[in-house]
Length: 73
Image (cartoon, rainbow, N blue to C red):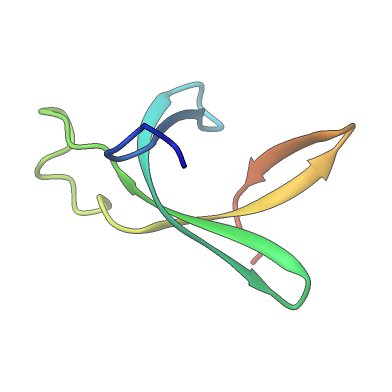
């Protein structure tokens, strides 16, 4: 069993080159595809941002690595 407790955070870079800190919430497999859910990390910059909600990213396996991608439209 792991000795680590508390939230897990990752940093992703959007298409404009901005870094976004996300807090991992949960993972789900649906129709053979893995998805992960995140909330933006609380910072002074995004407290009042109306887009500060749940973020769902798709896990893509590429060259032996797991990459996160936005959902297809």
